[in-house]
Amino acid sequence: MQPETTSIAARLRAPRAAAIAGIFFAVLLITSLVLIRRAVPADPLEAGVWLQIHASNVVLALNLVPFAGIAFLWFIGVLRDRLGEREDRFFATVFLGSGLLFLAMLFMSAAMVGGLIIAYTADPGRLIGSPTFTSARAIAYEVMNIYAIKMAGVFMIATSTLAIHTGFIPRWIAFLGYAVALLLLLSSRYIEGILLVFPLWVLLLSLYILIDNLRQPPAAATHPGEQTP
Image 1 (cartoon, one colour):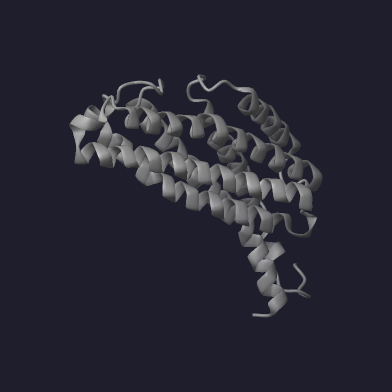
Image 2 (cartoon, one colour):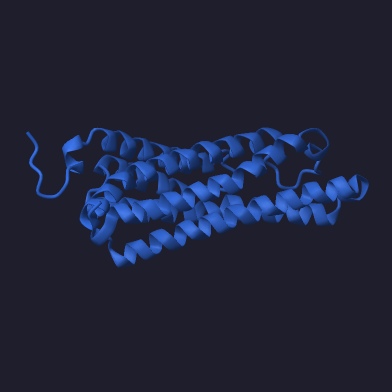
């Protein structure tokens, strides 16, 4: 296969790969967040009774988080590939940086909750209600519900701005992204389930990219110099 033909085929596969990665990320993160929300009370100062009753559900949710993170990294990478030379350096830097920061905070929060479960398994009587549990629980809650949410909002703003400048997604999805990002940036930590709007927006974006890619005519994949009938 000629190098130019290989490049064209790779470009054609890139949008579909981004869409599939985004769908995987959204589904896995939504499932994880719902499982955690149903098992763990929203109050960061609760005593930790959920460790006795719903720890297995939380473990399942935490095991989904790394796979969601891998899919999100793939989503970011393939979106940048779709942008190609149209990518604005400033917004691309904010896009990449905010996405990586969101992912790092998501992993940190999940790791702290996982550490609590391990500590509870080792010595149940000493952990529940202890200052160590309260501190770790509060830190995990703050990181996820304050800092990670804000980075998700910044990621949406950067992605929506790139979309408007390059036209790789419709403007209505970009403007919806601005509105949801504003909600995330200005939201209170006590709005339950607010983080779900981020993977839902990524899911909408990914579904559009996938459908748009499937609608492309097969003639786009012809060899250079060939003519379609």
